[in-house]
Figure (cartoon, rainbow, N blue to C red):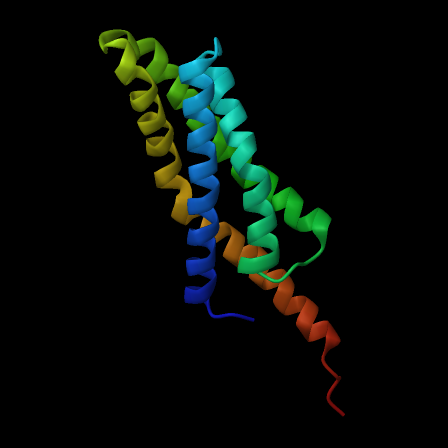
Length: 147
């Protein structure tokens, strides 16, 4: 299995790609559709989460049992997603009315990033502990027994 630094680098790249995708979806939906911050940030979260899970599962850590990895991923990611959605919704209510119209989508994307940033290392730590431990147990089960 890849060293932890390699997994962190791969997780970082996967997260950057997913975040970029989420930001584009958020900006487009909020700036050019009638959707509010809650709907736009929920769609943005979902748009980034699916490719992120696939990249994390197949690139950062070796694939394990799908159900176990998906359960862990969904639990951790939904908590982070709920924070992102809540913060963007609060920003829309509290801060965005104070800004000129053209700056509102920019401020909303920054609030979405602010919510995503702090949970990044926590998510990696949980995934690394759970996914790597399960992979190690799987490798141990495949190794020949000592005689």
